Length: 222
Figure 1 (cartoon, rainbow, N blue to C red):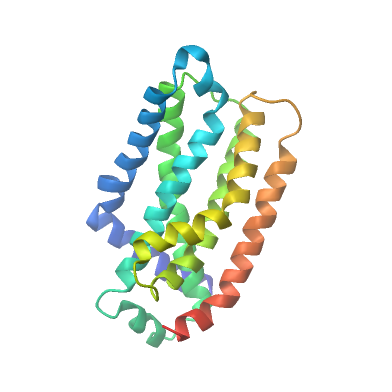
Figure 2 (cartoon, helix red, strand yellow; figure 1 turned 45 degrees about the vertical axis):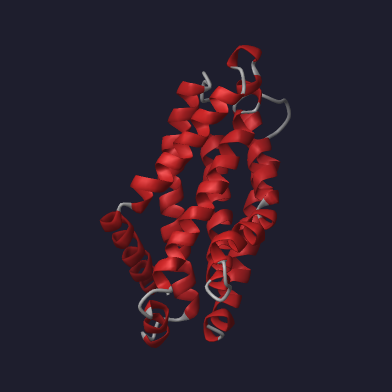
């Protein structure tokens, strides 16, 4: 299963590297959102510093929807999904491969956004263990839910507008937990941050488990 998932993930990442959609569209969109927040919220009042965690993860969620849409729009073209079904790969392996590819793209995006936030919001990054743990767990949750809803979106008309409406409410707990953990890591709030990270881990496991179980019937209904 791991080998098959790696094949699917490698295929997706090679397509993205050759098309440069992530680098040419999604990343500039995310950076533009960070920049617009900096303009909209007066840095002199300290609003940006207090809201850094929430703004960061809002941008990640919006960009994550674009990454998921791109990942599955490719599968809907030229019968690629039918070819995957006939390839002999298990649906769970295909799902995990899609999750891995989406997560890899989001991790690169988040690394760039962390630098942008540190510069534009005058934020000192600290609490690196909690910060990185939160990033990994939240990214797995986003990718796990996104891969499930991405294949659902292939069956719907107007998937470009319906996917955010379906996916973002499901990811609200990820946004809440990741923001709270980031606030603790950055020194914005007191209290332990690891319980929030543990909550993110629980949601990631739930999303990944349900996605692996549901991906087969979802693919068969395509």
